[in-house]
Every structure is written in C-alpha cells, then in structure tokens.
Image (cartoon, rainbow, N blue to C red; front, side, top):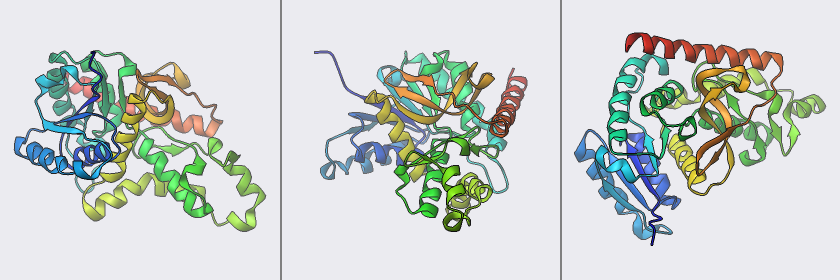
Length: 319
C-alpha cells in the first residue's frame, strides 16, 4: 500500500512554531508533525507536551523531533525560525540576520531530497519567501508565505465589530507587504456580497462614524499592538499556518492572501508580495488578479518597490 501519511516539518519551535503545531493537532490537519529547533531540548519538550493532547482531540497526530536530514519525505516544511524585531525596529530591520539563518536552513532541507511545499512565516515574510525560492530552486508554486493572510483576518475582525456581523461574512483582502506599506483593497471589500463602499454611501446615519483610514491603520498596527503588550504574536499566525496547511492537504482551491512570487501579475515581476491566490495540493496554483482603481494600484506598486529594494539590498550584501 502506498503511503498516504500527511507529514509536516516545523522549523523553529518558538511561540509561532509551537502555536502552529498546537493548531494542526487540534484541527487534525495532518498525520505526523516533526519538530526541528537549534535548541534540541526545547524541540523535545514541545513534542512531549504536544503529545499529551492526543487523548482530547478527534484523531491522533504523531509528534516527534527530527533533523533537517529527515525532511526528505515531508509534504510541507513550515519555516518559523528567525530573529524577532526589537523595540523600535520594523520587520525589515532584522533582514540580514533572517537571510543568513534562512539560507543555512533551506540548504540543509534541500540536501535531504525535499521536493514538497515550503510555507514561510518568518519575518520579513515577503522577502524571506523570495529568498527561500531562490535558495531552494523549487517552482514558485511550491514556495509561499503567510503574507497578508493574518492582516486580512485582522481587517475582517475590525469590520465585523463596526458592522455587527460575523467576520466570516466579511470578504476582502489586505494587499502588499506584510508590514508598513500594506493596504486594504477597499474597492473589493464586501459584506454579505454587498460592497462596503456602497453600504457606507447608503447608510451615512448608521456607519458615518467609520473612518477607513483609521481602520487601515488599526489593521496595519495590530501586530505591534500585541507585540508591545506581550512580546510576540503567535495564536493568529499559528492558526493562519494551520489554515493554509489544511487547504493544501485538502486540495481546497481556497483563495487566501499569501506571499506569492509575481511573474507579470499586477504588472509586477520578480518580487514576492501579499496577494489573493488559489491554494491547492500543488501549492500556489494561481494568483487572483484584482482590478484595482488607480489609488490602490499606486499603493500596490509602492509596496512592491519597498520589498524589491530590500531584496536588492540582500543580493548586494550577500553576493
């Protein structure tokens, strides 16, 4: 019988990696999770702790530690390793250290014979996703980052509070960098299929207090709001990783705002940025190209340029 074991390797067992593993187990997303961390004691302790969940979940997930050499038969490698920005830094400020860590990890994973899908959460996620593609040599469909999936979720949550609806009834995406230059594509946000901009125009008495610029700022700043108060953000992004992983294994063809490498879409090439894409068993199957009005297209181009500048600085610094 051919093996149908759904195996995930998680590299980096800090808050994000462990929250991801916890979500995968609770949602019964895969059959086997292998944990890798430079601190082997931490990886072992996390595996032991997570294994004690099994009596309380729908189906058993085998959890164990491993090494890069064991990644050859993994379906998905989730990359959570890397430095966190310190007080006053942006995600881009940790770039050089993140690239050095990422390059070494990816080289070792690829040496194992890995040919599956890389899913990246390490920041700055758009640039790191681009680097993983370059170092791994895998097709662009097999390398995707969490991108603006978490930002899109934050936007939906905020709007649901203003409009008193379930966040899942809000449709829309934050586009661009998972960082300071991101923006909500207001032209494509709908509430129960009705455009948000139409709702605001038709009901100024009910929703006139909604300031879209303020909502965009709160969406963009949400991660820092959490970070400054408790030192990390991990539950939301851990669940986003589980959501994307489940969509891959189930061949859902779900559209998710992920970090994807553009090859002509939105008029951009050779850059990795948060855009809605169809996620399948083969990874990123197709990028959904929204028709953006002039203002949003300019915002998208500016965000791409910021990411491209960071990529160029890496290529200059690291040869």
